[in-house]
Amino acid sequence: MTSDPGTLFVVATPIGNLGDISARAREVLQRVAIVAAEDTRRAGQLLTHLGIRTRLLSLHEHNESARVEQVLAALIDGGDIALISDAGTPLISDPGYRVVEQVRAAGLPVSPIPGCCAAIAALSVAGLPTDRFRFEGFLPARPGARRKRLAVLADAPETLILYESVHRIADMLADVEAAFGPGRPVTLAREMTKLHETIYRGDVAAVRAQLADDPGGGKGECTLVIGGAPVVDSVVSADLERVLAILLRSLPASQAAAIAAEITGARKRETYQLANDLKSE
Ligand code: SAM
Image (spheres, rainbow, N blue to C red):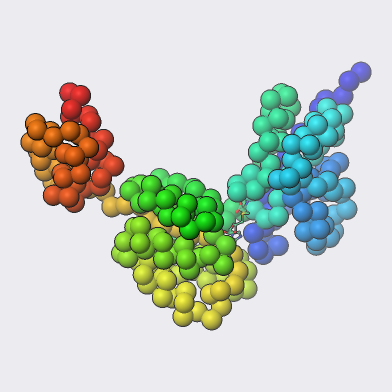
């Protein structure tokens, strides 16, 4: 008789305060056969804090592909496995995607044990629109590549959420100011749920100043939430369409869009798209 396969539980752990673990996460970590963890030393500290002695298996970005077979075999054998990362929700700027994808592809059960996620925690206190948001995780560390990405994101209308190392946060804010303008509203959530939790709020120029003035500003973990690009109101849109229609009589779409955006103050990407739409009508 073959036993039922085990379940892969994807378990969120605290992003700071260890008390933020759910009762269900604790119970699952206790009862599974194996806890697959990004860093077994850190996971060991969490399990010790919780009084749990489940076997640990290391699963990080460098051995994830190799571990898949082992995880699949254990699940097929009937054992349940909990997947955790160093903090927060696994797979969110953390390892785990390959394992979850392969376990799903094998038709085996995967179940979430939800909890902390720094992106959502920061968004919940940012005081910025939450109806539409865009999570970009870590932008490239190299300044040139980061600025390129920010230039692409500057026109996005939805609230943007970024992770950043504290060592780069001042440079990142300077680049955000250059790409998005000094008036863009931002919230910088530092050390959430920890002793030195600080939420800086204001336009990007003001937040840069607050961070620079804070003696503790150079330490801890940071999540940055940036308000979306202001939506062009309908008066501007109407003007834009009229100006574009005139320019398109004698200019190619790209030139007409560049001039129309300058005249009306509309966003370049949107204007270019509208120019192409009008041209193909
Ligand atoms: N999987 C995690 C999650 O669900 O939040 C994120 C992992 S990612 C490797 C770590 C980044 O999350 C940090 O560099 C920082 O940007 C952000 N972060 C984690 N804990 C935080 C905290 N307590 N306060 C602010 N940001 C935090």
